[in-house]
Length: 224
Length: 228
Image (cartoon, rainbow over all chains, first blue to last red; front, side, top):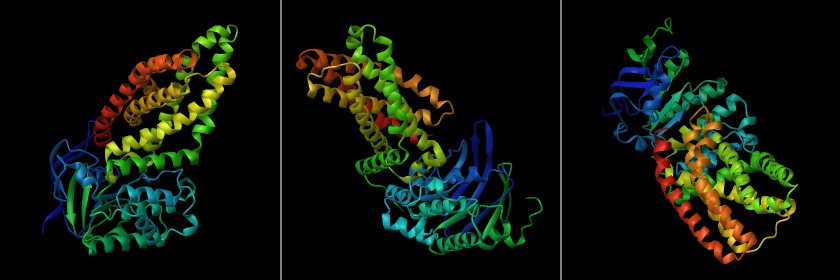
């Protein structure tokens, strides 16, 4: 099985700080991989590298068959990233944001509306400016903007953050559906009970290196 | 996998979005326009004792006011792209960097032209200016504004990534726009005071500036966006 994400001795610097200090990682098609680790471990940087947003100082990185050192742009348009930021224009309404981001990715406006429905964003919120939404509602809209692109690789940084219980269940369902349909999911989470349930495999990262790779069920959380 | 549209469709999408943002936030009408009128008023107060100087200096004062207002408009336009990870989202969107650049330039040009239209009325009232050579004035305003927006969008994108962008943008931009200021002022002097025909070489020069800035900007925007 070919790797969708293939990193070898990957080193990424944030300023002079080695946020990734030699990561080896393979993630395969249809897999849901959980990134575990304490704050500052390098999880967000790793997701940024896989998205083609952060360049490597040294090492090898191939994502979706594209070499990140030479063709980051080709990777960017094929991944979906849910980060700490909302990636939304605060003064535009929910539908105006979805219309813009779906059309920017050459998806249709209907794809954007369907994604909002899929994320359970109530239609009464559609015309509200994003700055008027609660954090959880904003998170759902961000998620909708991501999935309307139909990415092949989902990169999710704390996807459950700010969501209510129903929203968290919804996100878990979406990750499972994505993997079933052939997409690959790489996500970072501190909500280990929930994350272990949905992930096929997990890796623990700390100090910018992978410390352990184990099935989620055998993980212990004492050190996290 | 999603593929973005062409440069033109990306430019239209970005321009429409920027104009929509302006309509929602009303920064141009609520802040930039009052600032520009205030500057015109201050010039009028400062030079009122000698109306002759004010009349002579009108084209220069007008374009200096436009430049100051353009800096504010640019800062606002690119500050929006720096908030909430929007810059990263644009990089991930698959849109053509040249399309994003041209979209920003289009929206900025429209916003500045609308501002200039109001400022022209302000100049007519406050400085008692008579307008001759209206077609030339239109062409000069359009080309100068295109040049300002073309250069400004590049430096706006550069400064948007920096913490000190509010102070850095004018420092970077104003020297670059000095030739546009000179040509626009000279061309406007001609169209306001003398025979319109002799102002066309200035319009041609502004056209060359705009073309150079737009061409360079289309190429420079890609590394600015992609390597951010």
